[in-house]
Image 1 (tube, rainbow, N blue to C red):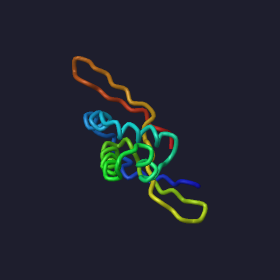
Image 2: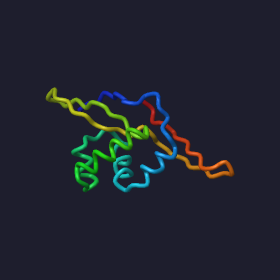
Image 3: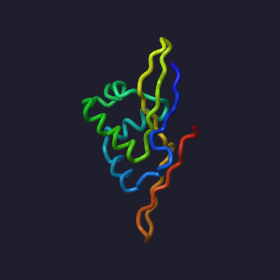
Image 4: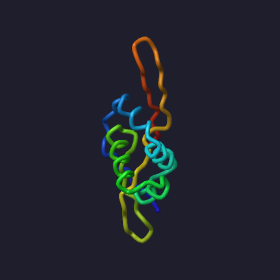
Length: 110
């Protein structure tokens, strides 16, 4: 099995407020953790999260919109391919100061 990354939002940095909101959800956090060690399909994520496929797709979309997840193509040994998802961040740091809440991300190397 091999993967070819095709980030759907390569130039976005994401909205810190939206990133924190989406990570407030257990299912979304499980998806980020599961995809941090390689691409997973929606079906694999549904099994991992023990959530409905509709819930998983909603969380995937939220994570994509927040630039915390990227869509890629996974090629199987038999020549078939499928859409998979991969975490784009390795670390998220939240800092609270007099100016508000600041979020900084450390991106995974491509």
